[in-house]
Length: 315
Image 1: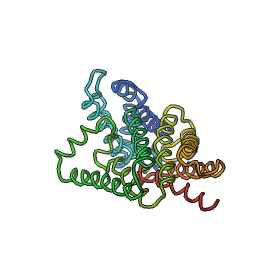
Image 2: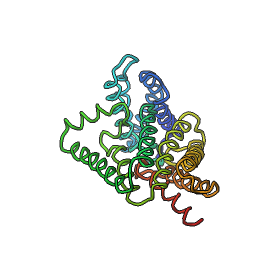
Image 3: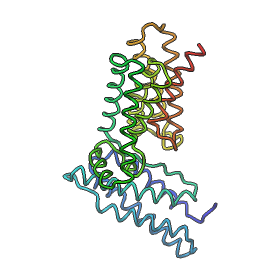
């Protein structure tokens, strides 16, 4: 579908999205508001002028979306704001961005959902993977792995169901997890729930060595790719990913998988371990790149284990 949307306005729209992507790079939320206010106001004025000239209702929807975004910006918390205030504003910003994203799809502009950088979440990612890895290698038998993973998944899905029927529980969980959650998880299944589901499927479907590979790839490669992609990603691929981030995922994933196999599965030859690590990291990196409708906390661990298993069968 073609629209008479001016090229400068189109460029401003992309600029607004790029600025939203910078949310995690700025130390103060009010700095985000200052950076966004001028380009959004310019884009809103351009869209309003087009609506008046062409009487285009879809442009009217875009104008309303931009006005919503402009109304959220003045509420940006300052440096001394509490974590609850920051979390609330981040959710409002996400909601406004989602409305804008929905309005511009007709123009063929892909505004992938922005995800602010979250050091606490990255630390939890790594810590959870290490704890699970130690349990797999030192504490749990294959049967015990299934039991523990099933209990964890059941608890998480129980809370997800509870959130649907209890606003109070939903609010409590959002506040409790505010330091490590993404704003969009307020109304979607939490990534932790998908991760525990992946752990259960790993325990059910794969041998411990492949579970180990999946855990280290997900726990180390994913945060490393996010860090590099947000700061140095320049060559855009798909779904908001960058070539730099994807390459980092592959490199870190392969190195982490090889290190884990060398430490805990020395029965494998070095060459065999290298191929398994590369297979796991490659398939996981491709899956992470293409994951759009499936949470990567579910798809990536399963892809890593599948890649390791497939290589072991072929070789």
